[in-house]
Amino acid sequence: MKDFISAASEKAKDQEAFSKLWHNIQQYESKVQEGKKQFRDLALAKRTAGTIKQHALDHLHNYLKKFENIARNNGVKVLWAETSTDALKYIDEICQKHNVKTVIKSKSMVTEEVGVREHLEEKGIEVYETDLGELIVQWAKEKPYHIVTPAMHKSREDVARLFNKKLGARLDASHEELVGYARRFLREVYQRADCGITGANFIIADTGGIAITENEGNARMCFSVPKVHVVIAGIEKVIPSLTDLALFFPLLATFGTGQWITTYNSIVFGPRKDDEPDGPKHMYVILLDNGRTRLLSDRKARVAGRCIRCGACLNNCPVYQHIGGHAYPHIYSGPIGKVIVPWFEPSLGYVSFASSLCGKCSEVCPVEIPLDELIQYNRIKYQEEQGSLLEAIAFYLWTLSSKFPFLENIIPAKLKNWFFAKFIAQRWQPRKPLRFPRKTFAKVYKNLVRKHRNPGR
Ligand code: SF4
Image (cartoon, rainbow, N blue to C red; front, side, top):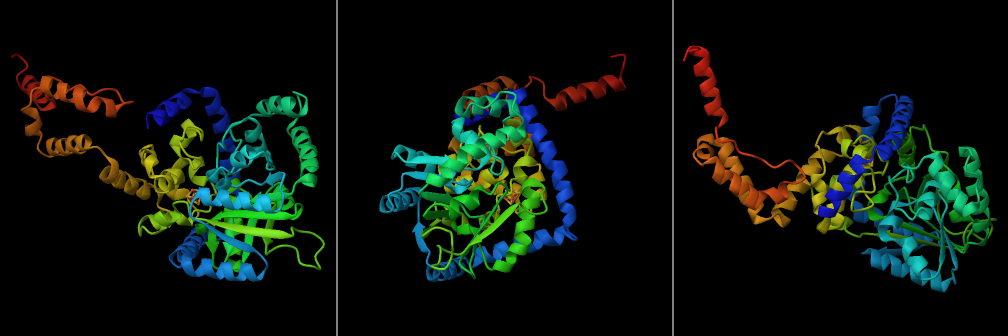
């Protein structure tokens, strides 16, 4: 927790980072307002999307089994990974079996969660991110800053400097020219890659398909050029039917980037058939749990599994706006991170406390997740399970003194200040330390009233 607080405090002081982030968030906001116009009844669209996802979560075992059966019939190998270690083991086996030397990856938060790139690089396999933002953070040796726009914190100048080092790009290259440099570089990589790894925006139960939505066409290259395609997806990504995409594709596009529809929307049903000209020879889908069952088995918290990772709650969060994505201790940052991370990694339960509880995140969420309520729920659970006894006693005394102020007033200020400094001050940081005054407010007020009534005395 100390590291998180000090990283967040540092970031909050970084004016340059704040202006870049703020500029990008303002642009996002104006686009989203435009995007929302495509919905005749946005409230109904959000309610319907939330209900469909909730239904899928409530019947998760049925839908996952259905997906598995149909996908297997389509020629897909479906693998179940309980932990990220299991997922990495499967990937190792696949790479060994198909003699994989070069991997291309499309943007996927779940691969970041598992640490796929770092793991494969350690094994001596070349790995390239193909999403422009992801390639930038890979070369900058950073983590994604945001779940939708990983290089949101980088300016044109930052990228030009980076591409100058990596690709010999001109420092005054325009945005379009920088994209051109990356495109030319990646073309060559696509041609020699043996394996493409993608995530999944949705897992479609009734057709055994994987829906992938993206703006650069790079994910399409990842799953159609190499001979092997591996999908890693969290189990909560399932939706009942192909027809649900008619709502989820535009909803995700609008809340993610302000578009009416994302540029490339693909549905992959399996490896290449004999009469098909392209596509991978082998396709694997790794269904990842990694703490999701813990979240989904809690009746109240399960609703968080509806998340479609649009990033709207991050963009609207006053805490995220000030500290950005890198200060958080996990790749899932912002409000949704504060809700799901404590279930994925209980030792990081303290992140739920980094919230103003303003409720803006719940207001903007397109699948109606009551994020602020869940953040409070996590806090209560954290206190019950991991909170210190001393803190519990302190809060009990606090409640008592608020209910019965005379109890607090009879204790001398010196003693209260000593108690605070000795037992509470450290946990109270980074707020300013409390000082109990010698005279209570009631006493000061009484004196004032007396003086007012008898001005001469
Ligand atoms: S919680 Fe809602 S707003 Fe936040 S990323 Fe998920 S779907 Fe989007």
